[in-house]
Image (cartoon, rainbow, N blue to C red; front, side, top):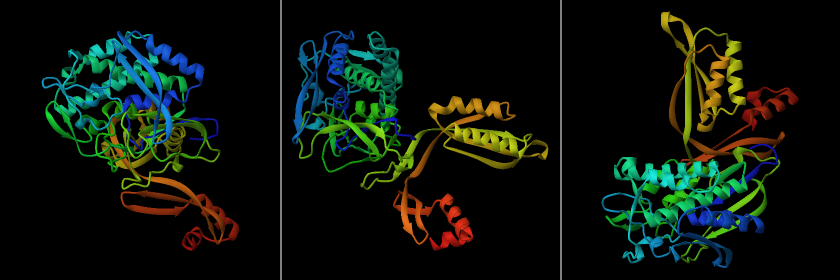
Length: 439
């Protein structure tokens, strides 16, 4: 994150996350005219029998917004208190920020009809939203269906959704996708997610919190239970964050332009809100300034959206290989490195390996073919675990020196930046080792 003009959307999940709460928090970031436009758009989107209202609400003295969804004139509140799975077909529940699902009656007044993932896609595609919004919403639902299938050992095609709850959740997902399109941030970050703890009742019986599908959606994401019993993060909230958040960290250095609060239905000692903060990157901000929260899980960073690309090369010069690697670093590679190997006919060569984000895979593949002699590359998904790092400037006997500091997995370490060591060594006529040892 470089420069001061990039817009940052930071989502504070200190009280978990639910689809309607995320939508309400983002809605508060809009101006009055855009708010009216958004409500009009979603109510005219083409989902039969549906109406959305944004209502002012207050949680622990903090003013925010609660999104009320009406299906055929009836507010979807009673069913929102349930995390129910049909006995024959697992399905995604619909959420309205009421995290403690186990304390409510499970009799339903609706007649349930089931819909497949294809039906969900068809309903989304039939709306009047832009192609980007519809594509994002379908991708979020694909994540949900995949998590449900893994949690219940069923094929994705066997996953079905209750009709009423499906409409409710689709509205939440479409709403968040449209709001992200309207806000158009350059970067979206989120805090580590409070999941809650305990148990929640479903049609099959009692399951642990986070619910199985939610746990799959949060794989590789920094989470913590917190001290509130109940379900704080729902599958819809987890899927939306998984789709949009680039990383999970404490709020980076930024100039705040607006703040929004999306309220849940229950009242706790803490404000039951998702908070969305909009701003621009501070002048000297860097990705390394994004740190974990002060929790037992602080610093334990993991990223599952990483692609490894590699190829074997035995017919390029060192200069050409170095140039290829540098172009990949400049294009956004997370890491580039060479491994010496012996290839066929005992020719010495190198394995060129690049780690990159999934969205950069095509760019990196093109650079392999453009700047190396390879005819093919290998690809695999990898999970990267790393310490949460930041840059600190410390006063030393040589003046201000930047240190890289890492925290995570019960370990804290730091080291002075090489450029500063080299500068001091040149200015003082010392060796790099002497400067390092004195620091």
